[in-house]
Length: 109
View 1 (cartoon, rainbow, N blue to C red):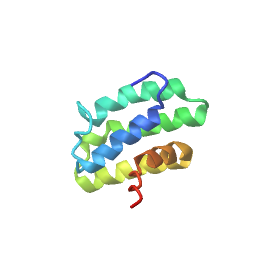
View 2 (cartoon, one colour):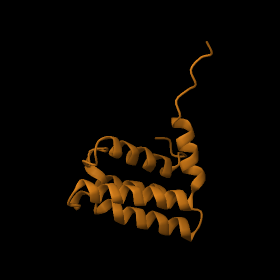
View 3 (spheres, one colour):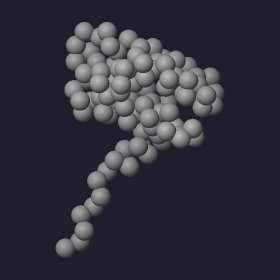
View 4 (cartoon, helix red, strand yellow):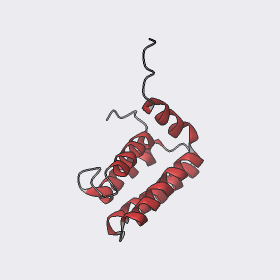
C-alpha cells in the first residue's frame, strides 16, 4: 500500500472483507489484533487533529479485542460500530469507498 494511501480506506476494505467472510477473523493474515497495531501507526501518522487521533485509538482498542469475542453476532456488532464511527467522523471516506464499489452500468442496448 502506498504511504500516501488513507488508512481508513484500508480499514474499510478489511472490514468489508471480514463481513463477506462471515466474521471469522480471517480477512487479514494474523487476524484483526495483528492488523490493529500496524493500522494504528498509519492512522496516527495521518491524523490531522486530536479527534482523529482519538478515533484511531478507539478503533484500535476494538480491533485488538476482536479475536477474543465469543460469537459472530458480537463480532458483527463491533464491525458495524467501527464503520459507524468512521461514517460519523469521516463521512467522505466511506462515501468515496462506497462509490468506487458500485458496479458499472450495463451498456446501452
